[in-house]
Length: 118
Image (tube, rainbow, N blue to C red):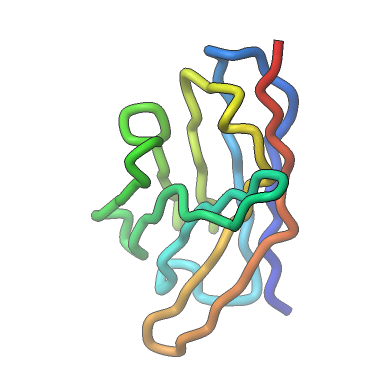
């Protein structure tokens, strides 16, 4: 049974930091590109960051470059999103996604709420 379980969300003040985690199970984690998406109220879901199976390549949405860092630990089947210098516009539900290029399998977590407010 495939599971992606996000954690680490919460309320933080502008300028603060949070680290999100996504624990994966039920599939061969190292063969999957992992992505973080977010969805703010009234807006479409958008891609935040992605990391390849080996962790050798990462990519970010322009508005997150320099503030967010995606990483993974294949020994722990976990992907992380370190978020620094948070802004109120970063408020959203953050979702973990796993995509398998060879199987075209696509899995989603349940999401974790991040609220940036003073």
